[in-house]
Image (tube, rainbow, N blue to C red; front, side, top):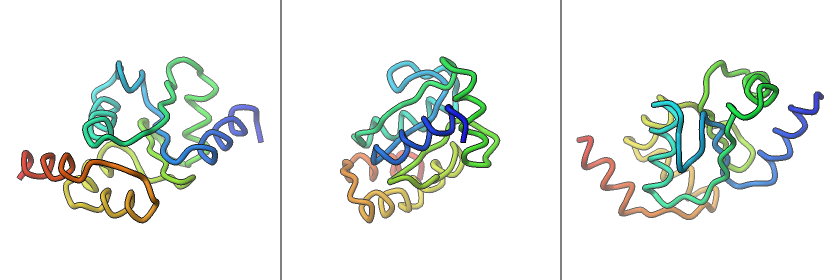
Length: 120
């Protein structure tokens, strides 16, 4: 494995929730990254953000690692969950709640419900 893939593998496995994104959780640099970070932030999920714009090797490496062509990419307990569209669908259907609960990841259930209510 390359240095970038090793670093990605270590990061994904060492943290419960990791979001590879353009920008940071406090300052997203694209709409898709902003949407996923916004959901996680609003739901109070504790996660590590990795800014792919800061390192070209990580930016390409994460695509190779997951075999997924787009960013953002969300990982929970070492497993690739999906990108913006998948996370949006999972949030609105309640599947993200279930995944977080089953993974032992804390989040604000009331906030998750508010997201669904606002999008009903």
